[in-house]
Length: 221
Ligand code: CDP
Ligand code: CDP
Image (cartoon, rainbow, N blue to C red; front, top):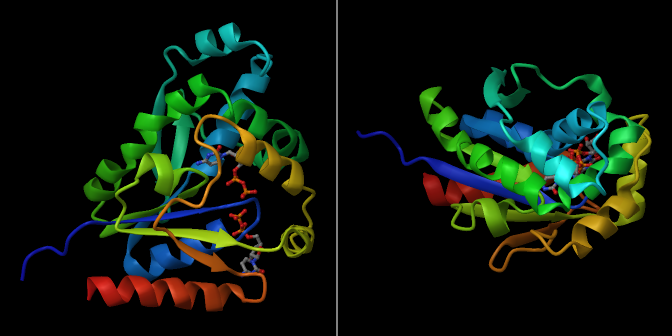
């Protein structure tokens, strides 16, 4: 028997729609590398804020992004991005980043700085012997991997999503981030054509995972 083909699973959706929890469980089930691209945008935002580069100052952003050194180390099954050798801190999940990240993520130079790095996660997954990767974000099925083997889009009612965040004890700007992410010109949050659209408003996390896992298993086994 030969090596099974490498698979790419793309998961997109709005804020707190369940992307990370679902991706982590799928990664475990199918031996995939888990890549949370939202954490990359958060980390880059944190770095630009640390350097006092405002999202309105495109020239300063471009200059800060020159010579950006991005490498990867594994944290369990998840890819952890290092900027200049440094991992993200806990602040990337805090309110300051929640309030700023979508502004930075709308800037073409910021998206361009992460594009090749994200696609390069295929090599990271292969080097570490994973069977494939599951990448989550806003533009994975539309821009990063439009030819992914599986493309899913997770929906959930905004009120339910706010409740899920609150249950985690976290404050978030869900509606505002969705508004900015959907309305930007460059790689907006859209349901990619041909993607499987799942409304998880009335589903538990386990039910969502079972649905996606069944669709994946049916095609790869
Ligand atoms: O976890 P949550 O869904 O709340 O957000 P996230 O996935 O951590 O993403 C944070 C922000 O990064 C989003 O609101 C987008 O502005 C941006 N993002 C993006 O533009 N493209 C991606 N592929 C992933 C995230
Ligand atoms: O990554 P994203 O921001 O899209 O969402 P998440 O961080 O995976 O999910 C936010 C919260 O909602 C987590 O605490 C999940 O356990 C929970 N969740 C849920 O209650 N029901 C679902 N169907 C999916 C997620």
